[in-house]
Image 1 (cartoon, rainbow, N blue to C red):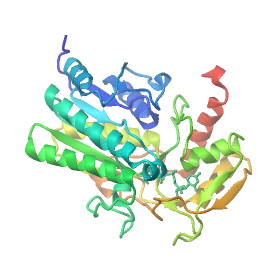
Image 2: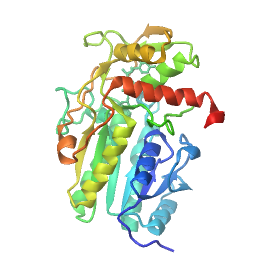
Image 3: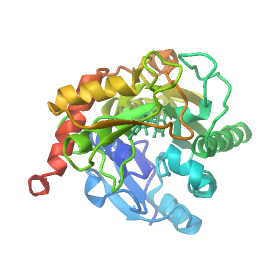
Length: 336
Ligand code: UFG
């Protein structure tokens, strides 16, 4: 039977993944009734700390439509996606299938079920190599890898759909480099083969990887390594709640950058990782990784102003420390 409409009922695709699970927890703590829709291809059932789980694939549009119709959410938060820039270069079709084609399925299911709001996990990768830094939301979208292109296409689907239908509104959040873990270490990143810098560095400190490779030291930056705007996952989760409130209040569709407005180089991150762990782990300088822009820093004035977003963990050491607590906990599964 279809459930009655409630403004606090939401569906989260990819809620068993790293970012999705932090948002599911934050939604639960804020009093939302959450249904996670996830195929568990990379996510973990144990990471869902609030609401219910339906195991399902976005490729299965009929199933998705049934779930949305029965749960009758006020909004969908869409996280489920493939997320590795490097892999997107070698396997582009996987990214266009999972990130673009499946998003189209989701939007069709939303229309069929009458769900009128969506929050979309977009990425700073839509900007490519920005001409101006910090990069603001109105900068041209010129992705330099299939990952960024696949997300840009979905932004376009959303914009066109909202233009054609006044009963549909969305917020696209362009994430910069999401890192860190729940400050109470209830959640964190837990992938079979992590590729992100901070996770690789900490797992190297733990001896899981023999060395950390630094991909490129000849970029046009002060120390030659790439610069990124690292944002704590708990602050990003709060941005989703703020975006949901924004749509519930009746505001119009838009896009927000999610970052702190300042960046750190790969070498900076390595130094802080060594400080936080107290371990001088092996580091090897290697060639550039394909698809990496030299520098990405968020212009974050819009989200601070229009969502009144107030980050609490804007500190690289805190990001590393929370991630480190989580990594140590993963090493002791019996205490979970
Ligand atoms: N890096 C290394 N060694 C590693 C891993 C990464 O030197 O073992 C470098 C990368 O070359 C890059 C930087 O660290 O210069 C950050 O790389 P990540 O893989 O941690 O993150 P990306 O910047 O590639 O991508 C992340 C998200 C994307 C998002 C992007 C936006 O995965 O979804 O941030 O800034 F689009």
